[in-house]
Length: 401
Image (tube, rainbow, N blue to C red; front, side, top):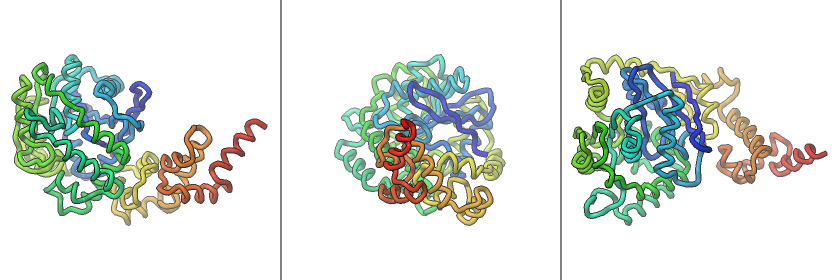
């Protein structure tokens, strides 16, 4: 069963989080670029990995501000604000001290948090993380400005439909698996809008924690795949050389995603680092069998995700079902088709925004999950007999009459 999604306040932002497991040791997962904590459970490999972590810990996961289920933002959040989000989630879950498990872009803030809040950090676990994301002579593995411009353009051109060739570089072991790549493209889109993804990508150039590495005091486990094409193993070696009390484990493989490829050694290293006990490989088979039986509540998932501009096939994957099973279960749950339900749900939400927010019609269109403004206006008029502006004017007139 997908865990319950909760919210906590970090300043003016609502931060979405989930808690899995009841272990005596807390692990807080800090995701990379973008994430969506609900969609994580729709991918069996990722669900199995998270489930395994929860067998020896209390696992806490969250979406940082501007991404996933947390409040959106038109501005890049500073490292200080991101640390505020971490503190807010730890406080909301009554976590006094936790291991910070971070991936890719999430690694820098985890290292910085451990330095600023050592009393709340037991240790840092980083998979494929980096110290900076801008080329320099002393850090030659980061992209150059020219390379960043190329990747910025690729995001602008391909975010809406997903560039599967680009995604293959992140996960070579599943480059042949079109279903997985489709899910990954959907996951990224649900994690951040095109604008949010581009803002985060551009602002990552400003991340540079090279100057604080020598001051980190907590134990640090660095996990890197030797042939990762996104974050190079040389970056792990650099971190290990500069962080006291750190341990680097170089793993075979090319995948930048920690939950794909051979995950046994990754999980074994993490469990040993956290508990002091290294698990036997035979234990993992039973974990996989358990995770494959995780049920996903279709009604809850759809009610929490209807605003995302996903295809019906993508909603089926999000709910952990084949398309045929999804349509059957949807009919049993809502007594209508997915298309009609989504349209009605989005129009009702649009009506609420129209009456309770200052957003204009174009903004409401996209906030409500519609792709085309003229189609939105036509659909609104068909349901409510008036265009959005006419409906708002008449509602305001009634209030003042």
